[in-house]
Length: 271
Image 1: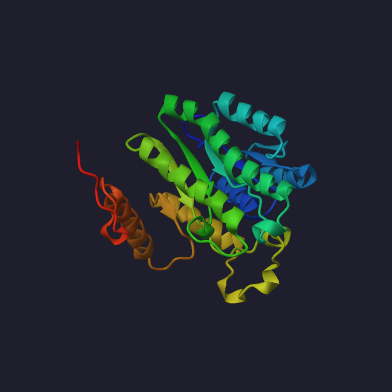
Image 2: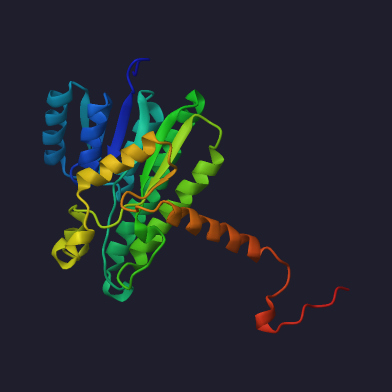
């Protein structure tokens, strides 16, 4: 159980490497106890032991493959029943960067299960307790490919587009409560996901690649500053504001009951 002078427990998915491992380190340094979730139990055990010794917090490793329904349910149950949990970091992700027809059905299913289903179900599992106490934090890791598509990112971008819209919807639903929901949209970051996706980091413009440590530190700084959407590598924050304003204007422009004039369709006369 968390006490009034501690931040509680953070559950971090995809915690065995990359952004998840950095989040675990940074949150432990802030005094959070941790539940670390990932498939690679040996790595998790080493990380858990290291963070517990370094920061004096309680760290538990929870081996789980979030693409497996039974494992996902086990993590969801932990979130639903553990009243010490005050933060969920939905960091786990799967990526295959290739044209759709060059991507196996299994890889497409894995991206859907991990990037979409797991993120939504884990958020759903933790929210009742957060609402009951009117407090808690959910951090969802999206991508700049949430709002952009490459010829090799069709499925991945689609799943990350879900992350963006799901998170922004939650933010509207929970506005005015004590629950914080942050959307983080990294660009190219030096993590293992690139090698696993089939596009090695060595093939990218090295000047565009951010260190995982810098990405997480920027994301947590954005959280501290109250940002709902954090783009760690974007210098001009007005770029997002203009993007969002254009989205709202487009939606408003769609709210009319007749075809646009460019289609040459005469509006039917009312009876």
